[in-house]
Length: 429
Ligand code: SAM
Image: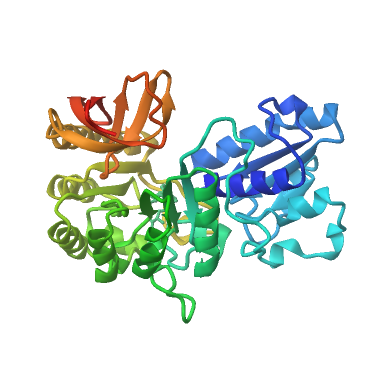
């Protein structure tokens, strides 16, 4: 989401004739877009913000814009006091305060933080044209904010309530992205499956996927993040019917124990989660599923943690994004529950999940060895081409040809837990 928001701001700056620089000390404007979903992310953001102070002291004309979840939607007087060298504060996704500032508009008369400008149609979700390398993949937010309120999660507090974007704007942005060379679009929302449900008359995600599917030039469509309670037949039908929609689901689980899940306010039980996974796998044969697990949630006992381990052994996801719980200011869990699992114990649990997932991923990926799979190439990492299978597996290929944006058949010659290596099939292309 932040990558997409940063591109939105970069494109808005480009429309004002700014050009990018890699060197902060040469910049006229610095935008620091921030994430605070975990304490470590917040510390990193504050570290970067602090490192900008000497630049401002050296060059008082430098405009510093602090953006994103560190600012949030509820005002920023405390941040202004702590970081007086910041010129502009803006809530997540919103380029308006910076653009107004650069155009010399009087901000003191506007209560920016009370007026959400994230839907401002002046600012498309497009890529800046001055980007250094050709870009063939892009993120496109379709739902802002979140109204679910998991007990540990700061996102609803900082990004506000769920707002689906109008479908015609999404289609327009998708067309703009395609016109700039993008071939794979990933639709984003905290609960992307809920698209349209907050706005009367809007289509649902399945219908939106069908509309985007019709755009010439779009080769692949992905969407994330899903929530077990909102995985409808309409979505599964769209994935099954539409060849450009990739059969990959990001379906966070968060914990393997029903009491922990209830304390997290996730809104489902383990049984229900497993049933959703079974339903997806029954409907779509060749499908991959990634999940999220939080370890060390307040009160999580050894036995409860072991149920997360058991769940992963049962579900065998293709990938697990594992996080150590950290209390986030203002959330229910930070206010009401004691963060009683020691850091070392969180780390131990983290490593157990990581190791288990490594083993599961290695076993799943081993089945690709010797197989030929279509791979979409999205760029280069060092000297090798980097691409993804339908099911989001990372594949590296050494090849002299320009593969960027191409879908090629690749024979897998090595398969590890986190990536695979292959060679282009000679007749492919
Ligand atoms: N919207 C998605 C969902 O419903 O789960 C994911 C959103 S969040 C950006 C990404 C992940 O961060 C979550 O799935 C969760 O595992 C993790 N996370 C969120 N709050 C956390 C916290 N307080 N401590 C540790 N991990 C957290």
